[in-house]
Image (cartoon, rainbow, N blue to C red):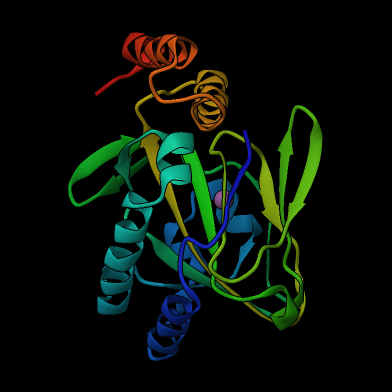
Length: 225
Ligand code: NI
């Protein structure tokens, strides 16, 4: 399931990220790549233990915790501290699958959901689309600054070469309480339908109660905590 999450950050928060990252010590992006992906990867990253990455990462984690779409779509158990990357003209990242297991703060976790939070607007660069492969074909994604895309970490994806300007983004992974993308997708659709039913009927309408019970009982059946 690919889900667009609009306005995770406000324009002021995006500007704050940009200003802070301008002073960061950018390094070769292959520092976090696996063996296969290192060959395909050409970009710059802020080292994950840098002060800038930690401070901005905290701000983004705070915004994610308050974002209903993110919580409903990802059902996060653990969220990897956000990292920051940059593709200048001539840079891109060929087709790859993200590492299945990552370590953060001494904790090992599985990557179920991949996320890219755009810190540049489409007007800032040409090329640079995130292209995600799923069962229905290829999806090219380029969003407004402050918007985020969620996609299955298991999917093959790439970043097209930037041909003008620069593309800045935050990226991270979440381990979900519900490992299976199909189940997660079903729960997300159900949660949205329940919201629509509540708006159209009432919170205590029997149909709303029944659907809500079904949602929670499926989550209880499938969740790992
Ligand atoms: Ni990737």
